[in-house]
Length: 342
Image (cartoon, rainbow, N blue to C red; front, side, top):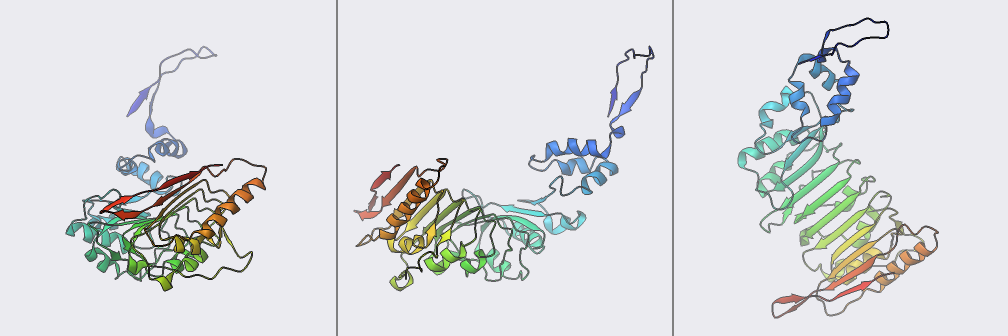
């Protein structure tokens, strides 16, 4: 690859014509060029690293500046090829969104080859099977650098994450669908940098008390999205609560979106000890039940209003509360929706 400079006169009436190759560019200039390919998927830097030895050295000497990652996806022979690369952070992506195909048996071996290097895994997105979860139970080391965890169970299977699965304090995104996570509040407590927490279709075996869950959210100053969906009714003794002491509230200063699906009493037990002064959107779906008890929810919303009015900023307002009441009628669910706007 070469560039020919056009002959042109200089101020001293001299003239020059010489051939300049890209090899004359400094390492800093090459890094600026390489940064333009950071967002490419699959990562283009892999192809750049194969151009020549110098480019490979420039790339591997700047893994943080270029945010280098090794991607393990469908048909990636991680079991055979991981040791050929430097120890870069790993992104393990085998589904996890919108019902993708289940990993093939040979994919599970490659998934495990990557996950066994738990200290390097920074992102996991998996459509899991019972056999894969059984293999995960063999991993005893925590995923200390994990920033994103997305787990989806397909075909209405309700699966349980092995108790040995443990992430560190760097987690920012946690999505799960039809996955029971043992000791979830204890796992969440160190995750102070969490931004997006969505737990959907939580099976009965994955129940956690509202008090323990609220306490686990304590200190999460960056949490913006919270979505909590249960599959079924917990037993009554599981959601009775005692109001917390006055002033002993968990404050979520960055929370702007809250979604809930379950029984009213559980929600009341959860929000009684939470303040979210910047909450903008609330979407609540209650299961059909003999009585509807949501007195603490009203007080929770009132606290948002009072905190908003006590500040001079109007950047954050409560846009609306959307309530859905599901009641089985002739095998069909009907919904009641009410909008409350300020």
